[in-house]
Image 1 (cartoon, rainbow, N blue to C red):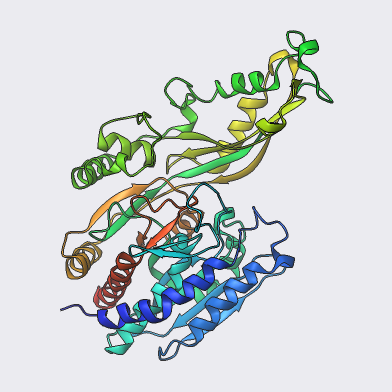
Image 2: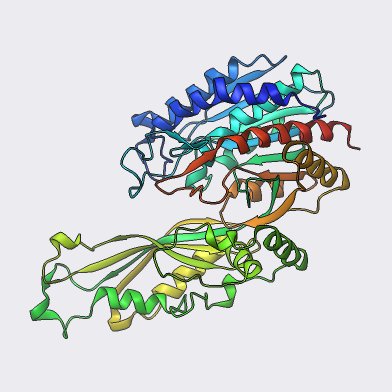
Length: 468
């Protein structure tokens, strides 16, 4: 029998949490990187107030809820639940969102919540506005049965999608309240399928910035200038060849690679044996497009322990409908280089800048403006109690064994906490499974999976209380 009141959790999700998440999805609370006027626009304030109001209403004995503000920084929501000892369980999530995208069905969209086939579509529900609701629902389910647990602190930020650059200041300011963090539960990651509890064992880092190549002070007729004035796009392409093999996608400089620990290779093989071709099939390939690798274990390692470059935006390129015969004065490309977990993110951005700006072809004016450098994270070895608790929780709530796998995303908060609490255990998990498409036009939250994950959080929090 599960320790926590799982029926209570399911009812609360249906009656209370899903309706609140629908409200939350409607608010365009874009992260500061995407909404520099976030303070005056007020959307982040709206979502943190929504979460605060809900949290204060939870019937959990001793619950304290605060919005904490530091001048000039995005706010954080902090909740505290007293426990049976002074060790601290830190539960993490965030409320800020990625920007909207288009390309899905007509009645859907980033700020237009849709429930279909047990999935709640809309920006931020799964990444990861659900976190505070799941965390307090789990603690409420333990309270309902008077199950003891350690002191619990919830830290919900509003800057994660911008690299959590405000968070170190809050970790410093809140250090006395955080106390002796012994277990971190991060609800901002993914799952390999919707049939078991998944533990994230690593996260990639990120080096990002804007590459700009300028060749003219203004656009000129391409018939007059082409063949004399070099193309800014061609130069940008040549510069990218220093970073990436365009034929294979392999990142060329060794400074952006790191050795893969043998246990992570083994975990990738085990995860691939569970998931089969879902690892590759989950992506919405356009007709005829082939994946970069066919083997499931290699696909997992490619997206978790090897660097990869994406061009995520461009300026200087007019829409095709307005594209006249002009040799354009500049091309700007926004680069996003995912890094292996053990590569320093700041050092990588410095290295990218040196690599791309040196010796520009045709002596063009080339700049690389660094936007973000985030170091990844590799989980510490799990203690026996946590390994048992993961397995027991997965069996109790899903009927299948737990599994572990690295994730390709970046959560800078984890590296920060790993440095501050080197003896803490980590359970990083989440609801972003196959086709959930975080940051995409049809991001969704798998509601049934989220209910069971909430129950698993309760089980593991209870197990921690009795662990030596």
